Length: 222
Image (cartoon, rainbow, N blue to C red; front, side):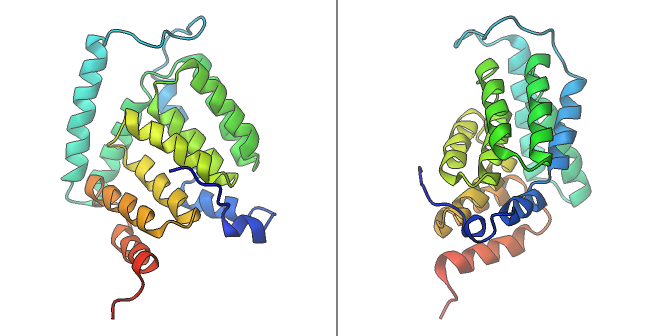
């Protein structure tokens, strides 16, 4: 999955054309909403890095059960309004375990992305991961920053870890689609988007996106 390909848009527009394109696909405003969701769920700050392995707590089991239920509801949602509500609930659950110290780093990274400084954001998301490397959303966010900075290989690598932790995160699959597309692997991008459509069939523009990716991957049928 590792590639060194840089997006063509970055090579031809050093002033940030690719960055602006990525922000249209995955708005930084969405990150601000995600941060707001974590604010209401803050836990006491931890001292030092958490141990690598811990017994699964009953609370975590309950969260995973609720998340699995919402994933199933999203896949079966009947209209865009219902789907949007479920997406928001899923993001709240996915950020529930983020601690205050980690959240501060996320906020700083969000400001850096808003200022078109993806390299600095990558560093802050890396620091956040050093505190809580078991939180899939943090891997996803660093992947987004890496992709905005043109590091498609790093983005794909981070998304691989994110999806190992949370394979039913439709947003991670959307980002993987963008990363594979930027890396020039049309078939991998199409495969990732098919997974998006399975998880979130009400996503606006999903069918049209599928057609474009299919055309890019295989060309026009004869």
